[in-house]
Length: 116
Image (cartoon, rainbow, N blue to C red):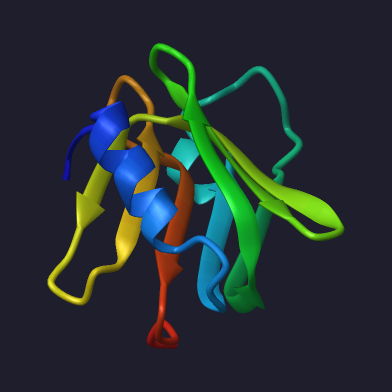
């Protein structure tokens, strides 16, 4: 993965506008962040192959970045993104890694389902 280039990521988001796309979104401070001692509470969220259609996709911030996907009746939102990749299947992969390289958030979009 490379550090986020906002113009490339914005172009990739635009390529998915008004299409049925598959979403992978996960956040965690659990297994990837067991080094943290401030809290005993583990939190996380995970969805894979949620099918959505968004009419507006925006990347904002100066790093780490935020991405919002505006759907007809709501939003999908991820914050803390640092890296991206567009793979050979034209899948957009966005991730947020902490200062030690551990994954904290992932947002992925694809025209075809993700492997389980």
